[in-house]
Image (cartoon, rainbow, N blue to C red; front, side, top):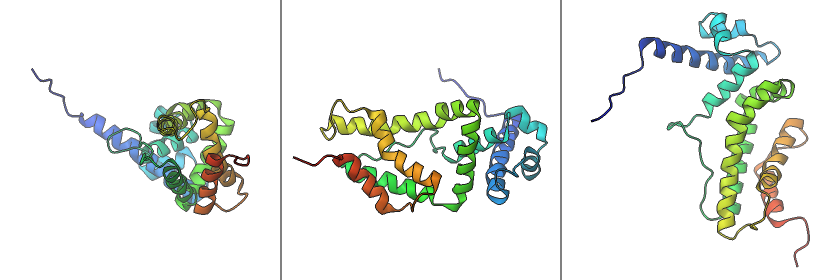
Amino acid sequence: MTTQHKPPSGTARRSEASRRAILAAAFELVQEVGYARLSIEGIAARAGVGKQTIYRWWPSKGAVLFDAFLMLSEQPDGGAAALPDTGDLEADLKAVLRATVEELNDPRYDEPMRALNTEITHDPALAALYAERLDGPMRELKKQRLRSAQRAGQLTEDLDLDVAVDMLWGPLLNRWLQRSGALTPAYADSIVETALNGLRPRR
């Protein structure tokens, strides 16, 4: 006997449409006016909803912006995108870090991402939410790819995977956040090569 699933009600569909309109409005507005001038009232006006609708779902504009990023990162199947695993660890990591460079250099994302990073620094609740729903799952995907390399004998078995993830992705994010240098594909490649080859001279 098969179980029949009822389609979403009209109310549920309207709520989801309103939620997506709010998130899209927040992402658009923060690019236009900057985070300091972004307001719940402005988001509500752009989305065509009452501001109480927003406050019913989110406690702050930072929380709205965070959910907007989650919506942008959603996969069609609802899951998270695994890192490429072609068997060539160096090539795979270079491809991923080059894609990260491209994203960080995209002017559509620069202001919203900087705003979100600033808000996370000052809002412990948002920081915990970010760790749980975005950073944590992404870190696990990165560690899964490194575990695959360990099984293939490409990395040492006793490698601290959390440190390895920080060594690979940390320099990119640090350079972007502090605007301390250009983010280029060549820089991404050099991070991978330095992390995999180590700092000590080879015997």
